[in-house]
Image 1 (cartoon, rainbow, N blue to C red):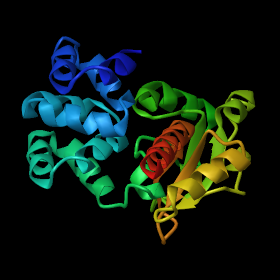
Image 2 (spheres, rainbow, N blue to C red):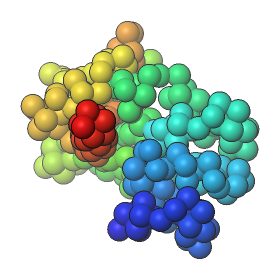
Image 3 (tube, rainbow, N blue to C red):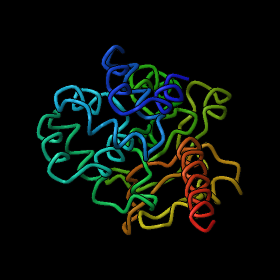
Image 4 (spheres, helix red, strand yellow):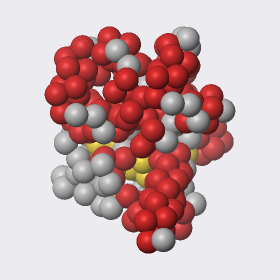
Length: 233
């Protein structure tokens, strides 16, 4: 709702409103503002404040914002961010924004198939808050190759001593880093998934694209189609 209000204001007023909001909420609001409006808001903000917000928002959202800014400003902001956060965001910026790699987030839950369900639930309690979603738990080997997936429902229904590798699903729907975002959205819709894992050419799990990201794709495509129709008139 705050994002909708900000979109109706002029550039100077938008920056003033965001300045009144505490960092966690401001970061969330910034991610919900329409991309074409968000870039102008980000450019009007001070570098220190904007870098603070970029650090605490999901890395895929931070990459989207940085990718819409002039290269020089983006480099300054990356230099002000923490090393770990800047490294993750820089990697995402290397992918075309309209691909699975450009849409994915690196905040997901991955574990080894030798863990028990009880150990997995304990792990989720500790690490789940950092993930985009915990409904899907991805199972990887020692080299981060994707081996299977386990839903939260399956996890809760299993015995505490059950080994994850015995109950995970091996028949997976995945996306490649270079897959077009509309193809990824179509797969999520067709198979009624909440998220889809994104793999590189070596089958290494690099990130996930969530249903939230698909909603953003549909929203952006709708805005673009409307703009084209207006231009034809």
